Image 1: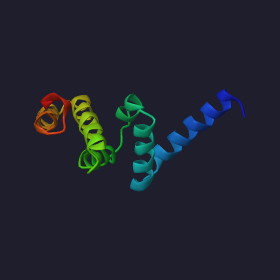
Image 2 (image 1 turned 90 degrees about the vertical axis):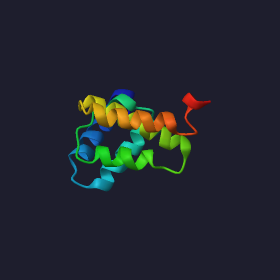
Image 3 (image 1 turned 60 degrees about the horizontal axis):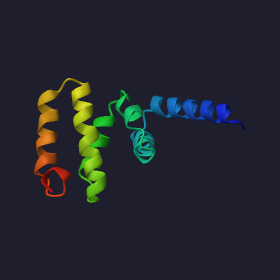
Length: 103
């Protein structure tokens, strides 16, 4: 299978998963985006499950994952023009003792 064919299969798989009504399928796909450092693709997802995933990620006990979750969450809120929510997340990020802003 060539590179173009693999890319086509990957795009079709992502499109199929995004059409699913199964929250777990969405969470697995979103985690794959995070693992691939595909922030833009993740933030372009329009789904009722994305906010829940990002909130879950932001509450991770792994501080690196939690920071990624916070970063993606405030950007998601900005995209939705929920500026007050975005500001709350940024405030929490700034107050976090593990955030680079406090070092």
